[in-house]
Length: 117
Image (cartoon, rainbow, N blue to C red; front, side, top):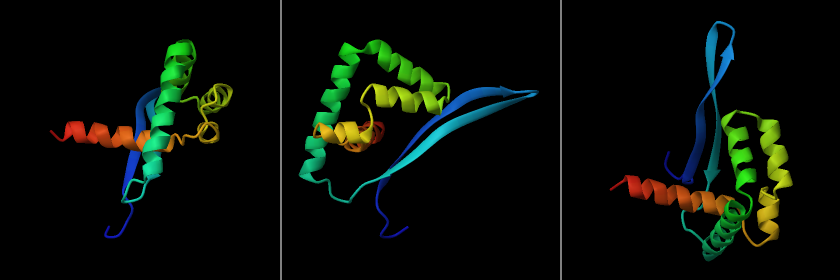
């Protein structure tokens, strides 16, 4: 669609939920729109975001395991609870000078670029 903003789709799928005689496969989906030109603040925020995530992986691996497991099992209420408890909401990242979605955008673009080789 001409003139539309670029975006990254984020999907987690393949989560099986048995439903009687049928197997139900569910997923989660999000779309992050971003401007055509990456502002300097986007790089700075992504740097802060990835530092926060790196510290979390180092200091609380069990918490990370719990939130990943909750996402993979499709337990949205548990994901929201753990995210809030662990300080992983967008507002938490913004309060520390980040903005989690910029990290997702940059990592997504880098993943796409590496696959394009």
